[in-house]
Image 1 (tube, rainbow, N blue to C red):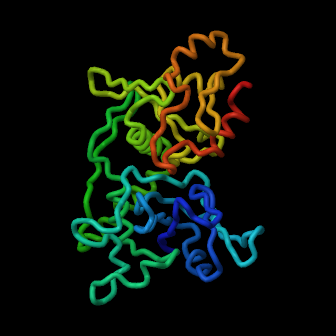
Image 2: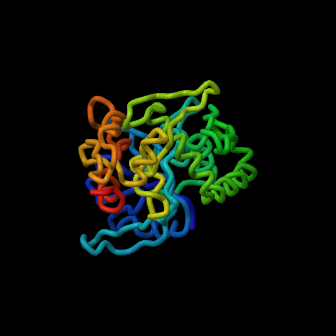
Image 3: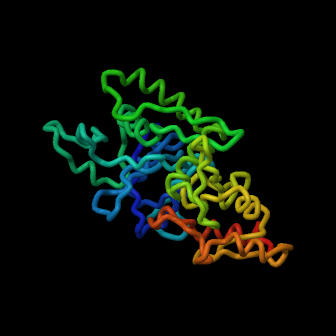
Length: 303
């Protein structure tokens, strides 16, 4: 068992769904099998436009032959383990390459960096995690929510690796906590949506500096909805209440739908921003994914 890096592109030709499965050819079978039951980090290569670098972590539950593609395999992701990083981590930082394991003895980047699946040391894993999950600016929660505590940013000292690894063991254990994951998910969504409600278009910050907007899961956690940015949307309290109760929904092209069961559709229409569509981030990977929107329409929205 051990940590691995999985390369994933937004425009991947493989049948990948990062929160659910990762498709790979047989040449990587041994490496992927070695990390079953352990954590991996997703990385988008630098040659991709607007690359996210190291952008998420997940736990591999099992590996199976792909029933639809001979010679291919699927790494199945443990439900509820996927988590987008609050901060995308670049391949290189002020102190050089962040994943030191891709360097050869001469300190140059080796061919290992091109491997779609590669092992990563505990030290490199710690370093990437400490940056990806760093919360340098306190995001004041709405009333009744636990405050976010600041985490160290920057690289860990390699000389402190055993101590840091123990810290990361604790951190990884905490990532199974719903309270911690909700907190990180809230920061991720509010950051992507600039604290603005996707339905009303309003950005409300109260006198205490608190953003009065919720981070809503499109497919709820209770229905195996993952903590991935494309399964989230920023909504005001009222819009969130209506969304969860199926009084409003979204089409695949983000048109805001009003249920025929809503008893005051004119008032609801008045809350919707002028475009009639949800206001979402520009990045493709940041927008609500059609598969989650479809789930909401089929299971929550009242047609």
